[in-house]
Length: 123
Length: 110
Picture 1 (tube, each protein chain N blue to C red):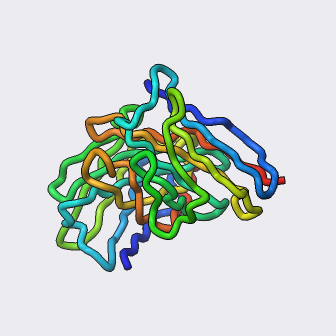
Picture 2 (tube, helix red, strand yellow; picture 1 turned 90 degrees about the vertical axis):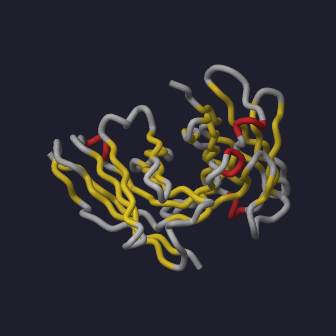
Picture 3 (cartoon, rainbow over the protein chains, first blue to last red; picture 1 turned 30 degrees about the vertical axis):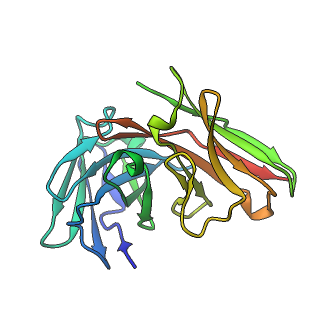
């Protein structure tokens, strides 16, 4: 059974960089059929896709966050990571990592999710 | 920027049928957007219900169905149950590796 688990600081200071890692167990991140994505959810609000990465390093980002987001992959450690720079209180959210499909018809199929981790941005 | 629209809230009677929709701020939703639907219970990660417009994810009961109705994607729940009371999100594929989540619909069963 594939498992993902977000890890990283739960508290980040305003203007600094939020960094999270998502180790993948029970399967290979080098799957040719899947992308690996980050999604966030501010408290009491809806879900927002941040971006995704393929094992080769190809990335796609939400245009509204693109200037501040970097997603990377480490196939040797079977994990992928998120960096979000210049954070503000508006970036306070539960951050999820997830696996999704790699072709048009299943690209929106996020089939395995981490449990989520709350990151609070403090001033 | 494209906005994916959903009803903020909806209510249904136990045993009833409800259709939630997923539209675009500009334009129509078609199968080309490969809509998917997620169910989220508070405090939990989302669960996939439907992908590629109308394909049920493994283990999802057949009282959940997806379709295109007019110019929107639709999720229909038949025989609503108390534990269907939670939030539902649609996702549209915009092409070029971009997906957008709808704002979500909070469903009440009463």
